[in-house]
Length: 318
Image 1 (cartoon, rainbow, N blue to C red):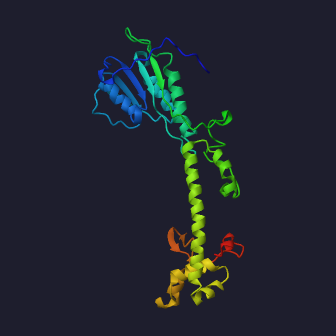
Image 2: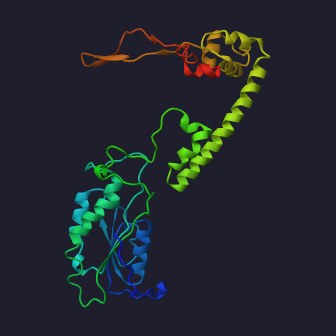
Image 3: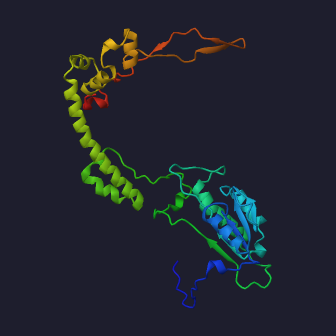
């Protein structure tokens, strides 16, 4: 809702060092960290009585600050603090509590999306709790009681009224499938979908890094194949099913020469061509006693072999 500008209001800069706030009572929700803590310390230093609400209190050495401990991700805690606040005698209430949205959705014990609970709903619950009582019993106050709510400007992402709890969609990510997001022709289109300037800039840098890696990969591949082709054993390794030119070159670099190993078992184990043995459920309880189960070891495939000839890595010669 747009309102008209009040032309009768005149801004007057005040030197903070000359402020005298003796007798003022202030409650700062989120006053134990960040800008809220800075407010608490400054107002107390100018003579105000401050109630700091938060999780961890680190200003016990500062006179004039009283601490209320609360987990504001829980609505029952927000309601409890709202009822405990002496709203009748408060001159200012400042809300600075809030968190940055996590990359993955987090949920509180009350099954509310965490950012929504801390940054919005806790403030709403507390304002509703103190609104009718705010400043009612102040002796001859020079100004009306005020509530300041501070918040992060956000990313410009439009919320969904039918999914405020973020149960169906919670991500900065943009849905995409296939490989078109990596093609040079469609990059501009995908970058336009990212509204946050900082995130868009990082995506542009990642695209540049991808282009550089693609060119570097072609050069390295050429040099790797040229060097490995000088060794006859490389051709023998290429003859093994599911081992391509690149993987054979990597194995050649790992083994260097078979003569450095005393036995074949050491060679197979070191190069990754050996058979791996895995077992599960090795023990069982018999008459209350834990005993080793007599069970044959399950034999797995060699860990350097592809699962089938249709492996997606085959097209890279691996």
